[in-house]
Image (cartoon, rainbow, N blue to C red; front, top):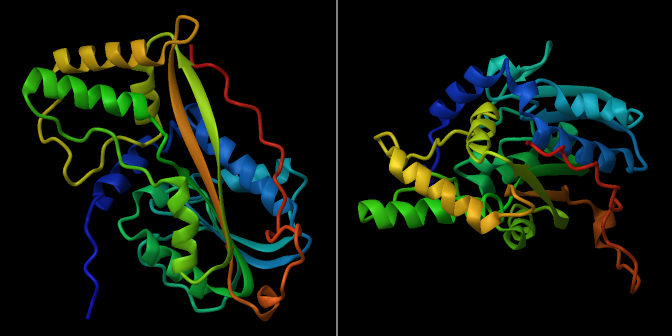
Amino acid sequence: MVREVPQIFDRQRLRRNRTRRAAGLPDYDFLLRRAADDLAGRIALQNRRFETALVLGASGGALKRALKDNGGARIDRLIESDLTAALVPQGGLVLDEEALPIKPQSLDLVVALWGMHHVNDLPGMLVQIRRALKPDGLFLGALPGGESLSALRAAFLDQEAALLGGAQPHIHPFADLQDLAGLLQRAGFSLPVADSDLVEVRYQDPYRLLNDLRGMGEANVLMARPRQFLRRDVLTAALAQFSAASHKDGKAVATFELCYIAGWSPHDDHNIRHEEGQPITRFDEAALPQKPENAD
């Protein structure tokens, strides 16, 4: 029996959004650069050489640049891919994370830099990645977590309910950190790990937060998104509530939770019993990059 997957995200609209915003992405990529720097640091900590690595959601080559800034990595062949051709670096591939045409056990490393939070079947994507990895191959990924934009989401829901008598979704749902390691384990990965980094960005004008989200290509692609434009009185009231709820030093504060996950393709060595107190992960916590400058 074929498992039916709920279609939460409009992947065609997502592709159009990312294509439309590709040229201006460097002006709005502070979260992307932070995630790339963190993942590059974790890769650099590996005491091994990766013969063939694949980057999903390459976003114009952000991870490759971060790897270079971290002193390079022992990767013989780095294949960069993205959902949209406009963000595929030269020599890369256009790949859809929901249907990866990859030969089983052909990769040593897969890095999902950006895009997992728009995948309708995240468990299915993880299974495909695990099958594509050679035994003892490594998967690393980054995605926004459940704490992201929580104050803004609450403000939209409250003000639409108050002014219109009902609310529709404007902010995407994000996975909870506590569930991510479980998803890796269900997909068949060994030694699954999940951790997160909270990033606060301050805005003198909360409208600039919406501009940043559009610039990132993160406009609403929910299948259940509203079919009519948001009324101005609702928008004004929601941003006022968001500013009041998140107020710090005279500015509105947007919180983004960046979650990082890691897992290994099963290998006999993973069954070796670890001594008490011995870490079971293959990487240490890298020093986090500096937070982005305030978006005043």
